Image (cartoon, rainbow, N blue to C red):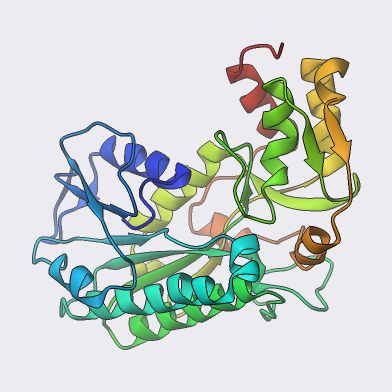
Length: 320
């Protein structure tokens, strides 16, 4: 697993370690025996089945050394986030594009098509979008990040067509509410406007209250990643990119729910300060997506926007 020490990577590892139905590559299934956790630094999980490996995702020799006969699957979650990839073109290209291609080439060297999960993004869409996007809507990314992710999807599809891997690319909704610190993602505010006020700190919302967002709660996103990883490739057919279930929630609705659950003092810690750079990126993303194909493939429904905020509020101590 690449990107293993990140928030989703850690939660994904925990979910896999709890399973007893991981394919063993020989026609059987059972619990995980080992996870090679690749990132720039170790994660926080303490489990003898997790082997942390400090890795450069674009180092071909390092990745080839990890492609052993007992490897049964690859989950590629590593990436430079949207805002950072837009601000630092070279870094985004090296990690998001060159790193993905290097990992695919390493997997190709195995000589057998093991499952390869690629975490993509809604940023592959943009331009003149229909009111509701579906899996057949033509991608038209309007950011370097979106272009890098779309190229990754196309590579996964082609390596699958050639029989080098058994690929699946999942377009993950913005995950909210993420714990921890803000990051360089253009969507970081979708967590910050809940997380920071609950911690007694002020938060800035860079988009208008009426801006619709396509979101998924953390637990639902992790469940979807596990399902996609374990899904038999034959069920996907030739179309290897999947829009994961999510829900449409405006920034204002999120804050209204926060106000209802945590009170005025908490919700009033949000400052509405438009940021044209962030708005220019977020406005190109779809906010309403028909995910009937994903649900037909067994992905769970997304829940509700109120649940998304409430799940985080309930786990936090009252703000000072």
